[in-house]
Image 1 (cartoon, rainbow, N blue to C red):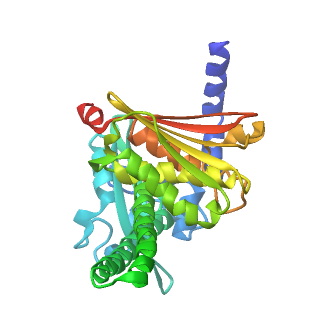
Image 2 (image 1 turned 30 degrees about the vertical axis):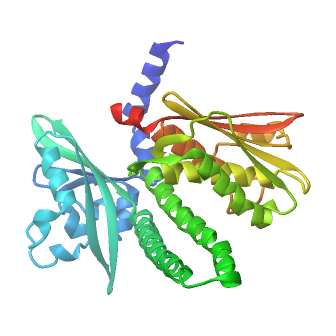
Length: 367
């Protein structure tokens, strides 16, 4: 590789003004401010956000003023009563002090007679020209992302409380029932347990994708977990007419891990296996507990085409249509990133087997 060739090209790119043109035509939100926090340059994305046609219209203005932040209306950007808490102002000051700063900023912007709440991630980069301090500031508008995340968290929290309350009432009623009524309730209750586990697992998947997941370690029986999944899915539409076997390969079956995550991973693999199994076929769950680790395998009689194998662990990849494809992806994400285990599969004429190999919880805590 000719390093000098690429160095010369980069220099030409910088000298020719091409980089500024590329940034202008991109979605980048970039601002360059002087030591008095007044604008010198910005990209087209900022002009559109400010409702301006040319950068000259914004020269000498401070961010809260040209973005029409409501907190800057009376006294100007940086002088309002709430400006001291502004993440953008704190980042700019850090940049002017020679520090790289990353902050978050909530702004209410006024466009005509309408107010818009916007959420920005801010990165401030210190610059120096002829001994004078400047700061370049990039903004990432994550309003929609943050709003969706908040709505998801509130929804899952509320529905989990509701389902959990109904489950508690049913368990209470069970003590007063006998005969067929009690038998019917015993059939229903496991589905409420599964529903609570599903919601809890979805909360953990969202937290995992946002790097906010915290493990909740407990001791539980791997055999009971696998058998419970088999019992529920035997009555599920996916399991009708199919055999679900459970086999423990070791005498020991107690593990220490995050039960909700392990339950979610095994359930997703079981569902995938059942979907790949024709009526009259069989799925086999195997578990084993070794020193410091435990292992789960899920076998079905189907084989996977090569094109499916190549994309299997990608988010939203599915052979079952739109809105699917989180199952195996979530298994890979949760097992690899949080339980520090490994996931793999084998496929051929004899069928397909997915494997989970997971460290015990006490080994996770030592890291």
